[in-house]
Every structure is written in structure tokens, then in C-alpha cells.
Length: 139
Ligand code: CMP
Image (cartoon, rainbow, N blue to C red; front, side, top):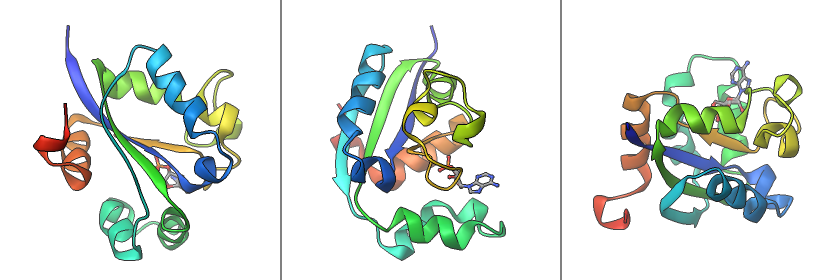
């Protein structure tokens, strides 16, 4: 067993479509334990800081504007090999390329409005979890 934690964000497009409950249900029914969760509205500065690894990419400005366009639900998910398991459940970044039954296929509209974010490595998970949560908030 390799129990890991990963950071999940249910993005503003999914919150606006009122499908956050469906997505949370998908996490739980796929064996993820939700060990921390909150709903927040990011500031532009917070979105820029969170996504700073993409700051040189052409989509960075639009991504940061989108991520602070409305509330998001951030969660810490725990499971055996949680990082890869969550990326498999989310599907490809572009919903048009993601497999049937994945979250992005079901609820994403475009590469920009793709419903969810998930950490892509152990280092990212560590950084992203501590960006949103203190140890006291994880149980
Ligand atoms: P996310 O997993 O949140 O990580 C960065 C986000 O940038 C990604 O999901 C997409 O929503 C967005 N994005 C927009 N264009 C691209 C692109 N060409 N490649 C990767 N991510 C992109």
C-alpha cells in the first residue's frame, strides 16, 4: 500500500453548474477519503501564486482570471496511490480528449473550463495541500 494525499479543486465552472455534489460523490464512490474540504473564493493574487509554475505559458492570464471568477471547493483526498488515481478519475486536461466516465468528460466544457484540478506529483501535492490547509484542518 502507498497511501498518498492529493489536492483537488472543483473549479468555478463546476460550482456554477451545481455539480460539485456529483463530483464529491464520484471521489467517495471511487474509494477516496476526504480528509479536508472547504469552499473559498480565490483572489487574483492567490490564483497567480497557486499556478505560478505556469506563469510563462500563454494561458496563464486567462487561467488565473477564471480561477478567481467564482468560488471553488478545495479538498485533500486520501487513497492508495491517490495522485495517479485522481488523475485517472479526472481524465485528460482537455475534456474532448478524456475517456468516458471521467469527471472532465462528464462535467468539463473545454481545456480552460475543465471542472477539476488535481496535483500531478508528490512534490506538487505537498505544496498544493499546504497552500490551502494547515495540518490542523486535515483529519
Ligand atoms: P489544471 O489541471 O488546473 O492545470 C492548469 C490548467 O491550465 C489546466 O488544468 C487547464 O484548465 C488550463 N490550460 C489551458 N490551456 C492549457 C494547455 N494548453 N495545457 C495545459 N493546461 C491548460
